[in-house]
Image 1: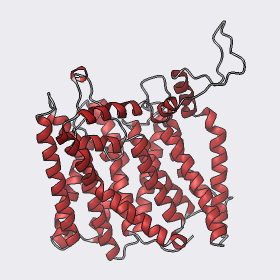
Image 2 (image 1 turned 180 degrees about the vertical axis):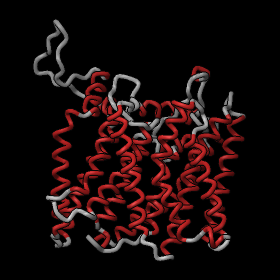
Image 3 (image 1 turned 90 degrees about the vertical axis):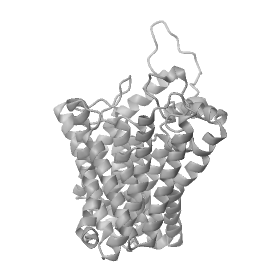
Image 4 (image 1 turned 45 degrees about the vertical axis):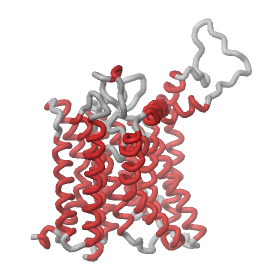
Length: 457
């Protein structure tokens, strides 16, 4: 039975699960808005997948010392969570056990899935499967589905608003705008890679159409993450092409063509920027901060001469982090005043909220590294993040040691996808703490650790 479950086709099914993630997210929206239920299809399917990966880890543990180590690590993580719950039930009053467990489940999801993916990729590599081709294809199809959903939602006029306030933006048929934005940013480099691998002539850039589709969806979101993701990917392709061109002395037609296409798209993005929701939202945010960069004067109002608007450091942080920096200060204050046990093992979900916050929706900072640190404390945070940083450093070391050989489109764009995920986790959150997003990060990190790039352009 074990050998049957670990056969190549079943392991590939596990990787192919990434393709249906957008469908699951649309079903989640359907559950919330149409069926009006709290336990959505997305929750059920993703929990089932996590259980499957847990079973897979146990099966691998029967024949792999590394898998045994992974299982021991997860048991240790479970113990840390139990200690966190035990200590906070006597510290936080009231203590919302269901909310705490829901949060811990979201956080643990990344670890179970990531460790499972590591073993899946290791086994597929041993079975001589072209994991780069499979992974790129699966992520590409996932990106295409997301792009199509956005287009259909816009055409039918059924797209959900991404903001409930003064800002503009649409999230297609996806319930969580922040989460789908993070997903799109991580998938976009792989969609670009799919196009690059097939574009041999700048006069025939047809393979970049899926990239443009997905980019249009990212622009429709109206978020800095969406716009920034597109710009980072295009700049990476353009600069990477130049480096390959001059450093490797291999000015192939393919490299030149992709350089021309990427630069053309950068120019197109620049021209389109003033008409995008994110451009309007930035001005709206500046207006909220009472900063005027040349808007129309109110009736009877005279603009002072020779007076340029100045953005303070505090206002700049607010513009970048959208008020999250204020929550960081509040959580830091609570953490500094917390008992030693909480400093070591964490304050749990939403920190040490006070009576004024009871009855409201308890909020996190929405900057993942801060959220995880204050929720799990010094010891818990170090234990929690050790696998991520260990395997991330391994990728960096492997790249630096083989810099010239590994500087290919494949390695570069998978690295960009990882860096975007990491950057979004720090600035906007919803990566490590959202299973719908963390599965992509887990797959990317596991893939890059188990894959040795072939030297090709």
